[in-house]
Image 1 (cartoon, rainbow, N blue to C red):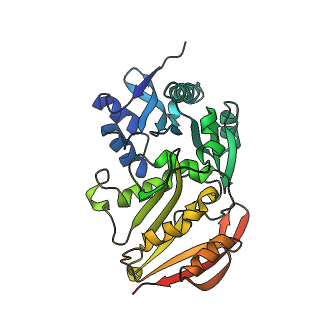
Image 2: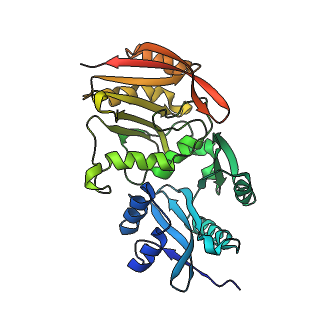
Image 3: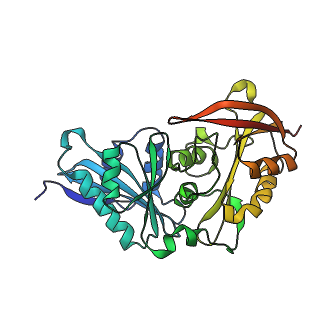
Length: 327
């Protein structure tokens, strides 16, 4: 019998347990975990399957389930003093049971080393794409979690600001396969990439009520989603430059699922409305013809061809830079 017990730590747990599961994390994970353990983000469910030895937390795996059943498995960590005993195996299994018991349709995760990827493959996860050494995996739990159902044609759509609770649904958009190569240049999101860390960057800057006061919304920042009935079908952002001498400019980016490409023009116009910046810059991969046509029709001018500008693993991509002036 193992010497640890598995406990679910959620926003209703004791403050001591919350502090214990947070001790492994730093950076964006600190405020993200603390915030969600205070109050759920939107309609999602969040918690950690935590291994405790007496009153000490020695390992965790977290679960996020959106209101529409998209799941993220993350925060897998074991205290160095307790590794090699099967703690990660137990917290992962408990988390997978939690997804199934709570009606998750699909679960997404990121994994780097091949030995770690094998752990998830044995549990039914499939590699959907890579970004350098990072692999994006998906486990489909129900027929409704298949991509052809999540992104089915004919859904009612709405363009709205990105909201708390959108993370897992946005992840489904980034992990699904489609022709767009550079899915989000400024955030470092590419074909098959996993969206968790990038989502925290966006949340840090734009969603009121869950971020520290010093990280409130930046001038000119926007984050919009094309919302569907099953999941999120598109994401568009304007991210102002962080360089002091470039306070008048920003990077615009957007990704729309091919089944809803007819909404890309509307997404672009909504992002531009009342632009507070002097100009917006867009980067696309040289072969993204649909994006090129859309940008040129919207008045963006080609500024430069950037050869081998983007390195993803062993592959170097050529980018084309476009810009539109607003002042």
